[in-house]
Image (cartoon, rainbow, N blue to C red):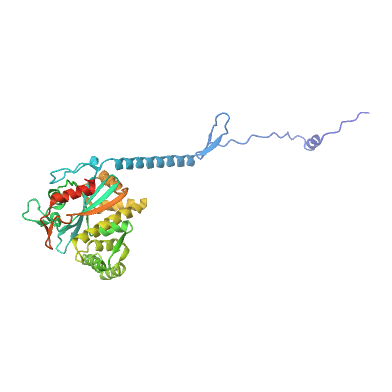
Length: 366
């Protein structure tokens, strides 16, 4: 007898659905290349990977940013090591001798305008930068000097009123034997803005006797703003109540208070007055050192708007970098004690040769 062999399960399943072809696995549809993903062929022995276009853009931006930072850093290093004099050339009016090399000297001028709109350079400080040091030398405003084209003796702070910064530079050079060619000038109206941009200054040892004249000077500035129509009476009253100080000590001063401190005149002497001004400049340099990059950029931008100078941008950047990175900040004043006669109004018979030698010892150690 003939028997059919038993059918396998797969054959039985196929027999139930006659005419249906066997199922063949199909290849997945190939996705078109798009701008969002690019297939990158890998070398032999390595797996392939997909790199997105935005990620590549981020990499390019990062590389560009790093290159920019390196370029700025190299530029900053170059400006630091290049002498300021090599970045520009200015004439030193009235100079008859040259100071030794190694330092850049800039005359810092602070203008005060009285009620008659007469501007006098009531702050005159020689900033000497070099060899990792920043040195401040105050020039006494009451020093009796000879001014070119004028007869007799005049106070040093009158030279600016007679002919501006160039006449002041010439007068300082002719009398003290220096060769200053660079200057930076700021008027007292703009000074508070600059101090506020760096967050104020820390001043040690403010005496109780200095508080009342400091407050008086703040009231005077606010009154001038009222007279100019910049503030209402209610506004200056509120500002004064906020600015008023009650006692001395180690104080943090904002812009108006720092200006009031710098302008104290009649409490003691011009020696103390110049000392207060040097203390503010020293404290301002320290505040700048502690400022963040954003604050430094804001300060630099504002400074270019309110500071008058004969220096170009590269000289300013080089000088500022050297001053901020200085490890020492020292100060003195000219004329030094014992080199003049004081009649209570002006310094007479100044021995300028001894003061020139004192300046050389202070700056160069000679």
